[in-house]
Image (cartoon, rainbow, N blue to C red):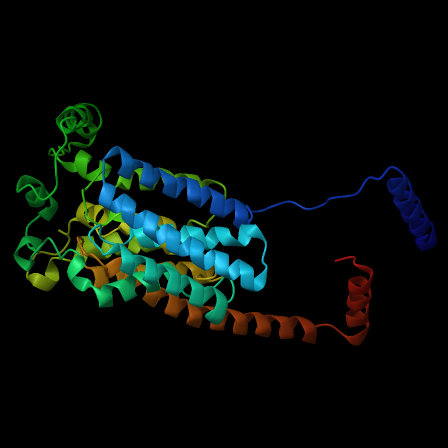
Length: 376
């Protein structure tokens, strides 16, 4: 019987060879890194397009400079390693991210040097791969912070404001956040049609805050565009939504419950919208928190990682308007990821040993025989 099955298998192979047909029993459970990078390039292009529309020329020059620094680092990497061209995509995207995370007044020459140095060193000397345990743009921004922290904006809220029910409302009323002309029209429509059902009345200014908070750091500005980008990224498993979901959820819960308590305010009165729409929270959750190689493998690891990142965001960033807090949050989370990955690998070895110990020698020989025949 086995011999007949083997002969049938051989006949099928011969017929397939004659017809130059090959079996392709492979499917993609997620897009390739190259396709993900192309998608990220397009989505970050939307952020740049908004800078063009809003005539933010200083920010555009900053992003272009960091992109040029990344292009130079990518070119040298190609000359050294002779890698395929598509391996240059991650470096270029990282260059754009660095430019978007820096304040628009930062000196362009310094931006070029920082971007080129960090990307070139990480790609050719330290990690030598696009998969590294640390998010390199985060490192570059922190280096820029130490070199020129005076170019970064300061916190917009004080301890006294945190004791208020909605600090973001006061920031809108005192002109810290601009209000667009169309804001009142959209706000009135939402209050009369949607929020009325929940007996909620949203004041003017929040629509403008969602659309463009006018931060000097480009990545913090266009929250609505960032949300659309996150939907596109997570819709086809380009990135797993587990980490960002738990990161955002834990962060806003802590902000809501405990942010005012530390300065003498009431529990459960923190401003969630201020936390989400400033400090680059949404941008971090979409583009930074899970760069290639910086997250755990297992579902449990991802959940733990997301929860810890949310806690770190609360203690480092606070409840909003931080210029650098989310960048430090990502860096600390990357370090935590190393510990999680260590325990994941240790757990996998334990499980593998248990499986092997349950097999006798004859079963192990059968498994090895199937492996040699390519049946697995």
